[in-house]
Image 1 (cartoon, rainbow, N blue to C red):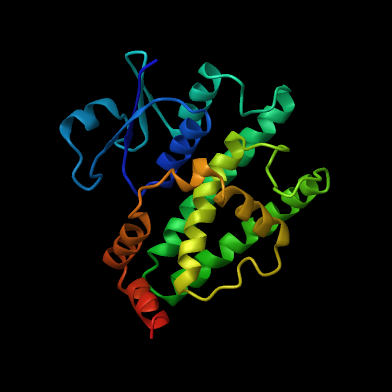
Image 2 (cartoon, rainbow, N blue to C red):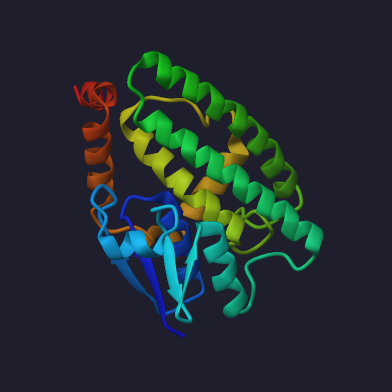
Length: 230
């Protein structure tokens, strides 16, 4: 099976699919494009002009959640629960992760303190909801690592891992107690970030380019990053 993932190197939704491919130990090719100046061939195959796009079986698949489910279905064993109700619940939380990634992006390019604070408040509300669901799952697990569905990484974990990675980077520079009263999220984040499929899902220079993008996108955030270094 020949798979080609069309990617932008900073996109968290692309990272979800890379995690899934690595976790499945699937051979694939990755092609990086500049989303600010996308090639014409990409605009012809991507209906919304967004990444990721997966080329598979001479067809084009778009949207990371759909791409990941396709990869999961054609490369057993599955990273999703078998019961339809459990699978539906996982899909719902994957959608929740997408909303949180969008809020995190808004936070990282906030234009002023008000925008930053308002977005952070929305994130905190969602993180509180997430803490409760992860607490309930943790109570049913006895292993040292914490995953959404038990003892192994799932597509839901892959959906949240990019969020945790970017939080870890942001909070190196911007003091924030967003995890302070969320021990279960802290444990879940640590469990995911130490997985090989997660640590290898971004390029070696990801951190540098991530902060370059933030600085280029927001003078306010550039000031926050610079102030934290003084």
